Image (cartoon, rainbow, N blue to C red; front, top):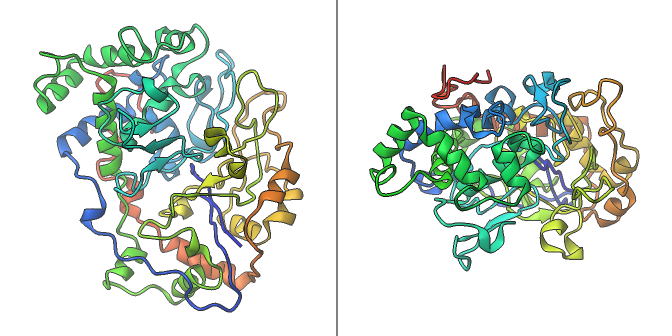
Length: 445
């Protein structure tokens, strides 16, 4: 079988390929070291902290990065499918604003942010639509194609460009503000584009202007502040704030402390008979590849505005290859016990239930029914966007893993191991939520 928690996110998928009666069948990872991470400029990270929590980056100045990536919810938002623009409240309490109703629910689960500053993360998002690609002028392959500008320090920085350009996440509804208007016109880069508008907003605040000038004296003198500068600072913050390598499992790998008896049994199952370590491999328990794990489609699906289906075809929408239908990226499992709901669609709220579901995903998929409490209310009279996908049989036919027999004791042991991946310092964050931000706008707490 494969356990899959497709964040994000990624949000996680436990994916495993089993071998009955096998001993340890996948290599136990080495302890994480400093060399596994990109170098961080602390001053840049501290500036990025303010930007991460500042709603100034959103079109209507009402949503920050922290709205959907909050430490209270394991750096996700505690719901299956988020409400971005047009939503009010935080986490499971978020609801549609009756005065400014959302156009559409965000179609995938908000991924957690742990260890994204590690060097091995060269592909991001549930479908991998942004990847390191040295052959491109920007060094990255993204949906922007050749219009993608240089200046982003790494893939984590480039990832930040997507939410601010999404009308359903941060940009805003049609015609609501200067950023949403630019996005709808396809004006992203260059003067007057969405990124330029955001950069000018930030540069107009002296705390940010002074902070960036201290990082690079050319900013504000020989050149203007760019969105890439802003994004680089946010990336430095995320990499610093949510680095996670102090869990009981990490201490065990370093020989500093033993795992509990039950967690040790779960570790042996994970890397042995259950086969989870086949895909959740390496220091951060991901092969960074894409697999069909049979996660049920839940919600509106990933469709263009002119399409009328509620499918989410995963990696296929990036590559166009039939073999990639319903494939989603293997996420890291660090702090997975705190990042519910699970699956690329947030299909399951309970991790133990999610693991059990993937022991027999084919049959379980066809009988799946969404929990009505999993996603925030979209319509007061009933939520038309809380439905299930129209292609479960097609998903079932693509599942790649055999079943694995897991009894209640096995599930308990695996849960003990999942809990041993929790690093409370990383969940809390090293710098924490600021008391205020330079814009003076409210900070989500």
